[in-house]
Length: 433
Image (cartoon, rainbow, N blue to C red; front, side, top):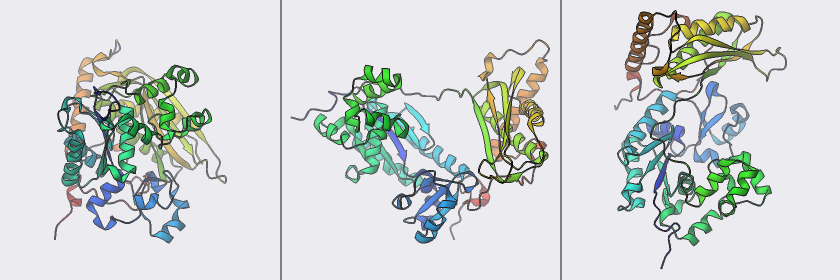
């Protein structure tokens, strides 16, 4: 008689992950890329941030600089594409919307990953239920996904890893239906670095202590390793043994800081160009601030030249500016951050990157205005910002903007191989001929 890994596990948590997400999105609208080695590059076409299985088989690592791969690309016909974030975000929303139909308890973990609590569906065959998810997502979006099911989020992540890497599972790995002996045998074959929260940084330290596989860590003393590492390690070990320590989050908590920065496509030395970029980044950050219904109490601005050009003089500087009263108004935030930029800017440097950060974030409903502020002015600001956000959401990004963001933007990042915005621009909608 078989004994399940956890006697009647009370939780059935699934992790759904889109395979090679950025590459898969590109292949949906360009089937000629199927079976070809494809990489998607980061901002300014710098590094590989997504790789097809064909590219992974060539030994290309995540984050590998593109300029170092060009010889390999010519040799094997690797196709490089610029990141198309609007396309990826829209495809992600479609996948998450489909998954919402399979459980009311969903946590969107990242752009291509989502947890579902399937604990209320124990009467179903959850392996078959998960296969139904995969088929529907593939049929409705064209994106391939894998599903891992476990008694905790940590085990669900590991199960998803097995679903991806081991064809025997056919895209769905359910730890909760395995025998204890069978699961332990599987965990003994997985390196400890594959555990969620361990990764490359902690794996060497654990291996030095004799914990080389997932099974080794599962059998470790959680209190002892907590003393050597942290409470996070204790929770990881307990989760590997079926005790839920990391609960589902229905709504992601508001961010404590909002950062917006980019590397320039070309070196920038002109102050006006820097000011345009800083204005754009602050407007992007302010939009995110309003989206999470927060106000900022301070702003930070920084600029720097490239540390990789020894022939150019290096300069890097930043400045934090506290606000007299928290705000979410793009105009006020831009005014403050441009004042900061004037304090740190130095002429005759080739700037490679700039950015802003909003800090000391507080909920919008809890904001106290200063004694001298005028309520009518605040109401006008709220209405104006809400109108700008609504227009840009409906008509497209930058349909309405501050003039100081600029129009030509010679400093914008390189995207020499960007695919069309198939799902977010009418001009780019594919046509059947």
